[in-house]
Amino acid sequence: MFFIGKDNSFITYFNKTQSFSKKNYNLFSNPFSKIVSIIDEPKDMTDTYINIEELLPTYCEGLATAEEARRVEEWMELDEANRKMVKQIQMLNMAADTLHVMQCVDSDKAFQKVKTKIVKKRIFWWQWSQRVAAILFLPLLVTTLLIGLGNEKQPGIAQILEVKTNPGMTTSLVLPDSTVVYLNSESVLRYPSVFGKDSREVELAGEAYFDVTSDKEKRFVVNTPHQSQIEVYGTSFNVEAYGTDNHISTTLVEGKVGFLFKEKNGGSQKIVLSPMHKLVYKPLSGETQIYQTNCESETAWKEGTIIFNNTPMNEVLNILSKRFNVEFVVRNKHLEEYSFTSSFTTQRLERILEFFKRSSRIHWRYLDSDEETDKQQRIEIY
Image (cartoon, rainbow, N blue to C red; front, top):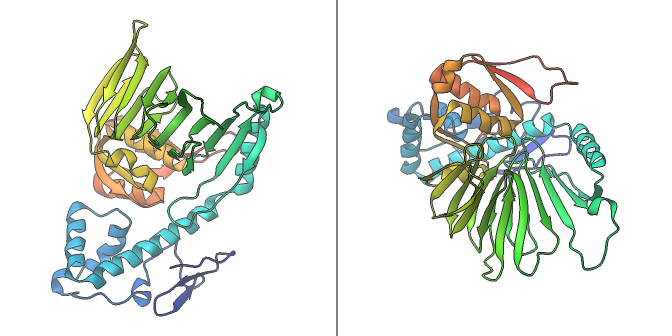
């Protein structure tokens, strides 16, 4: 358990009432350099597991190879104290990541940027909050109330609520019908303050996970860019529908959904999706693909995890770009032929890129950026 002071000066670890100062314990340069001094000594550290201590930091960051992970997990099975030690390291790692994110975020700049956009769209403030979550996320949620382009509020008329997530941020919300929505980075969700009598319709531009409250009398409809819809009655599913991407996808976890879209000849079509399947629709060609999936890699983002399962390099970089609000510049086109299978729980992009460098000889470096013209930090991949 941790307590983070307002000035981030102390982190207290409640185990044998020990504490340590940030001044003497640099979390960011090497968060595990003194791990043995603050955590109970592990059991069964025999010759067979002599290098386990070196593997634990990598394992807890989600950067271990399959062989390294197997060795650590075998060691964890030997004694409950070993498993407890791994949990303690993971807690320390999450605290370090959170503090790093807190230091990197310029909240004043983010506020001014969002405020400027809202003024341009003639949107009145309804609610604004900035929250710091001391676990995996640092959501910055801006909720605005659209009042009919300046029309005065009228009793009995539903108002349109808009929820946005800033780049690199994730949040969750509950709709008027108790449907739970997780909103991924750079996403926008619009919904009425009160749903209609016949249907429950929302608009999504970005990525979201829906856990829809069952109501057989009112279908739930997600309107996405490129004139496509997803209709359900009560189910759990993920939707990726960024307006800048050339595809829209939906992954069904449980229940049943119908995907409605425009065909190339101008007609419309509806495809019913079964659980544990993913549908990908390409608006330009009208092409659709359906394949089976375990859903974990599609929905892990809402738990703060990134999972790649034989994922092509260009898709990997696209995911990381949205997650960490960076722009990748690929110098070596042959790298696009690479694919990756791995999972990451770390919130530090540098650690993921270093893993790629170590496993695939992919090099990277930060490029100089102009704060006035560049909206994102640029990273060269070569």
